[in-house]
Image (cartoon, rainbow, N blue to C red; front, side, top):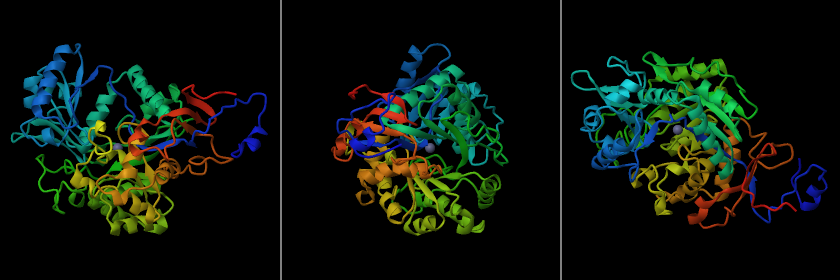
Amino acid sequence: MAVGSDAVVKGLVGPNTRLVDLAGRRVIPGLNDAHAHLSMDPGNEILLETQSYDPSWSELRETISKTIGQAPVGAILFGNIGTTVFGDRTVDRAKLDEVSPDRPVILGTFDGHAAILNSAALKLLAIAEDVADPMGGRYERDGVGRLTGVVREYAYDAVLGRLAALASDADAEASLRDDLKSAARYGLTTIQDMPVSGNVDRTARLLAHIPTPIRVRITRMNGTTPAGPDYAEGAGAPPHPAPLVSVNGTKWVLDGVVFEGSLSPRASRSDPTDANDPHGFAGLPPLFSPPVIDRMLKDALQHHYQLQVHVFGTPAAREMLDAMERLGGASVWFGRRVRFEHGDGLTPELIARVKRMGVIVSQQGSHLDIRDIDPALGRGFFDRLQAERAQPLRSLLAAGIPVALGSDGPLNPWLGILGATTHPDRPEEAITREQALIAYTRGSAYAQFEESDKGILAPGKLADLAVLSQDVLTVPATDLLKTRSVLTLVGGRVAYDAHVLAQP
Ligand SMILES: [Zn+2]
């Protein structure tokens, strides 16, 4: 209704007005996480507690044995692995079966693009020996055609979809509820969620039922079949299942990640300084051929939805821009706000093309290597060599490209803001805290066509805002992560109240 001095605002006070004294605290537009994956975990899933996201096989083997000893009947064991175990070809279904002959074990890479399953997990998820590879994915086989338990890209997406489907409605709701509650505590008022394949309708239904304290935009992240992308999936989901929930847009994953080289043979990394290394940004192979990418673009044009594409490496970004040129160029695409999710491998040449095509780049500072800033954090996604080329944030802003920020991991937005504003291995690409806050609010709102309603505190906009526990523009970087909201409002209603503010 109004933004201004005490005198101006007090003039609007009526009998039902609740007055809150912020005592000089900073208030910001509510944060908007442009790239999140809300969890829907089965209640009987147990996380293997290892020291890091990149454990050794011996640590993992011990942890699995120990966990089996304590786990209730029916438990599903899920562990995070990194390049150490994934690069070790001797760790496969057979080796996991030795440690866990009966309990399902799923070892997922920390980036979410590959996993190793034992026989019990394959059975639980009904993945038969004769399963066909979905386009852009692979169920790896040995020399005699038997599944090795290794699943890649869109095959892993199918695995995650089936795993989420095992969660009861009550478990899935509890999982979503926890995520949304913690989001409101961080000052988030919108989350842009991308549920794994097969779960769009269900996510929409559950979120409408909860009901959510903050806004959630659900984007379809459809799976693929052996014949190609599954365009029909989620097409019937209601666009507005609840007042704070919307469903729109479709996301496709056009390449993998540098750690596993998309569908490159599973092996330890070769030379990451080599520009053509499949494990580096410059050489990361796309998952789809140009005709398939063209078809994705045509479907978005035909059905009038926003297209979001996971492009991590340089080749997939180039292929996407080439496809946009083939299908009408900027005159067709500018204004449709196609989104590049990640865009780590964008080169200066591609940045210029992204600008011309009106593409939005959605990045995640939380992926950067921020150990030096706060060793307690453990590791970011990137090791040093890769981080030196990742996320050209300042260059994107300098080119006038709309940038949105999001988490793609733990929901804490201050992790991403810390990464984006320090960029430890590529400091020349760090952005200011004010720029990061704008990207995490107005930038993310623009990325969902809602900048006229939110992302700024002004009369006529939605009253989505957060009062912060500390002044994030001035605290030392090492303190940024401690930031919490003390009062979060969504549409003028209290979504979270820490009860530390006085009511005069
Ligand atoms: Zn993601």
